[in-house]
Image 1 (cartoon, rainbow, N blue to C red):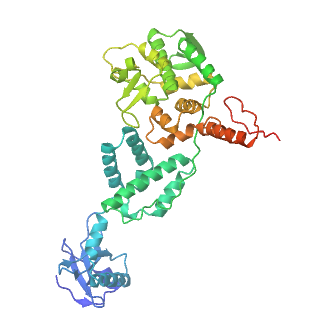
Image 2 (image 1 turned 90 degrees about the horizontal axis):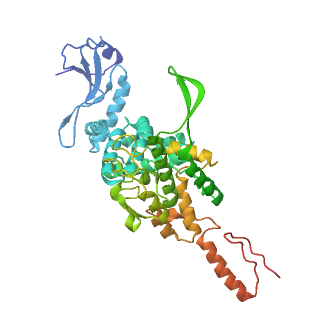
Length: 438
């Protein structure tokens, strides 16, 4: 494997040929020690010889290295010399460019980071949180960065991802939080040099959707819930596989009536307890303790928790009948599955009750607002609704319902009386501006 030491030119590269399938050393460059031109014979697939620049040197531990610098047909000799001098300078300072290039080539990708992160999340986080993380990874992170090296992701990449989701600010903020957490772990594992790519990515402002129901709306909703199970079935007639446009009205079967009543009972329980949808839909018989007016939920978004039931909720649960071997209080048509179609049922019920802007989850917010209106503190509301953090209950306190408003009236009224200032009392249940009499 000897070769003459000459000044390698472009013409020499073009003329180079080889017969050894392992490659042949064609020439060593005279100007840069260690720079070599290698040639490999033509392959049947490409039909042309492969030519490469290599750099021979000894690392600081005296081991031999010969990394490939690039394709000799694409990289001019002058460029190869420049790169070789830079690498030799690194070698003189104690670095090992060959090992570093190998490390970069085998460095973990974002796909690998996602896999490792989700594996740990499944073992430590709640299933609802993991499901949301999996969705964000699948929909936004893997398609955009999956094949890239973790270490190559920088602030510009995080900013571009955040900007791409600006039309859905809440989702953009959740994806940002997930990326921040994932790359904090990557930095801890030595996969990313830091700092965190999301460090200077500012969150979009979020508008909290809070839609409590008035007493009139609740009364209207209650009326619809009472009548909805018995409403006749309206369907479009189908003739030979095609819809005719003709409406067919028929009474519901016994099975349909029972299912509709179960859906209504679920909605009533959501209103009365403030539970999350799946906490009621997937409720099982072992979780009931009706003698003590309790639900002992084995699993929820905030973990296992106890739900105290009002008398009306206990009455609803007592009239449910156990069906077969299913563990669910509200069984569905499919064996071993809970009842389905709660969202479709709610959409029809809210339309009939003229509550088109009320989501099913707003029934939970309504329970929190009702608790705040009764003067319950944030800690009590958080425990009632199963929030992990007390501050989450702040959203339910409106200015005219907040217990702090009552405290302000009480303290202010006492001090005003001491000062000899007469004030007109506010209307019941509201907070109005004081009118000071001269």
